[in-house]
Length: 295
Image 1 (tube, rainbow, N blue to C red):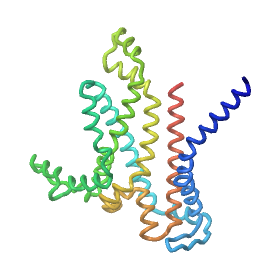
Image 2: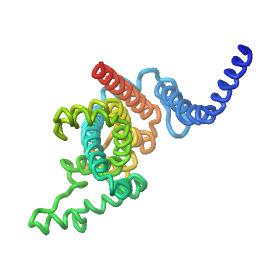
Image 3: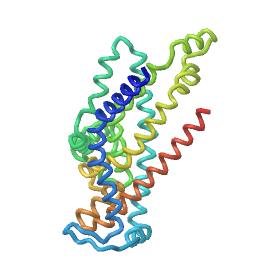
């Protein structure tokens, strides 16, 4: 019996590794290998033409002495905070609306989810048209209410906020679905007990729903943080190209400029390595805070 159990256990282990092997190979080829190559190139004076000369920490020294880098880092930090806070709030409110409308929940989910399935290129051009100073719908509504036309993407003080709204509109329904899945896992007995104690809807939300969604919220914060720093090249490239006057020049776009416009691949690699280290630090802090709140 023991031998049969051991043989079955080994077969299960082999089957398990066989199932995850394709995913591990894909992750290795398209995530780990490029990441290792990125770190490697950050220590070299490398360009697009193939020149590679070891330069040690020169790229990092130049990076931390660059005003342009710190300007881009500040812009990225502001963008990240706005997206993480407001996208999470909008997704949570959307989940509450869907959960409170059980009869029409499927239709509402479908309508809300439409932006997620649209390409970010299409979304970028769509919102670029909406923000247009001369013929954009938003400015048309403003002038209809006797307001003054706004520059939005052409205004350095407004462009980052306009970009933030676009990115939130595109992604919030995805996180709404995650919140809905988490809400469905909350035991109904907890709500019934709260009702017996005379708790209002707001009290049940704050004392039952939110505490039971701590892990879900932590997961959403982690993913949103990474997405708002790394997966934002397309909207920036399509809508503003980092302008006006660098007001939307996020770090991923800044790295792209240095690599493909100026040909400095080594310096661009050091930028992205710094981004990865920054995300690791922020992610670790979020996890530690989340674990502390669960105790």
